[in-house]
Image (cartoon, rainbow over all chains, first blue to last red; front, side):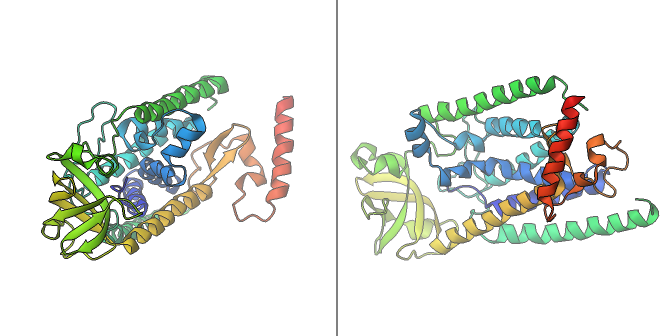
Length: 174
Length: 209
């Protein structure tokens, strides 16, 4: 469980991707950027484990239990489908796509983490338990990933803002 | 757009997805194949019976209790002590040497019951763990804040819809429920209680149609 990048880095990367999409596609609005950020956060719902450990659930329900599928491909698909059902129907297809983009960025970043064994986690579960070689780029306790992501986020934010201001000058009714 | 399969279809879909999700959590709990843990035995398996793992590749996590040679304890009580051979040279993310109380995760071959010949290791100080929890909480709160500001729960449709924005909705026909001045209440609205009563009244009216 120690091998997950910190949530802030994931959320910042979700913000960057979402904002870039909003620059490219007009129908991606700030509310939709939030959906990419939620997707980027979603595999870390596994951190419920810190509050409600597997063993506690096991004791309460009397069945074997593990939160870890939440942090895999299979768990991600189920979580984002459930999440999109919470939205009104006309937003679901787009939300599903935006959640998926965010979640993909999360798994990509986490496969790049440094692990003592040199293997990443079984990201493709339940399709296969194959573990990709770990990227070995950083640890979740490193500070530079959040710093780099934060700087890029600020740049992307100011570019998006400038474009929005320019657009509202062209279309004063906007 | 109304629910394509009605609210009962939506509930059915949620129940199926939820059952699959809970099923997978129980399934993994029941099998040894933890997707997030390494395929190698770790300290929870090795500490009680290290003799069973001699000669095997294992990964041991613990904290440093002695530095010459480096020894770790895998349990907070100080029990489960292993000597880590060559660990200072095999650290991936820091220059050695390790100091007492540093957290270490070491992968290698168990040479005898209490000696691990290290191939790769990572370390972190406890202040770095605190940092990770802090920024993770900030990240989570940021997302929650953005969602609350950008979306609201429409009680009539039992679903989240975007809050109206100046420019976001100009191409979208305004639903009757959104035309009401109460629809765009922000989280900072001090009159939220009055909002609720008006929502309820509207729900009541709709129910009569």
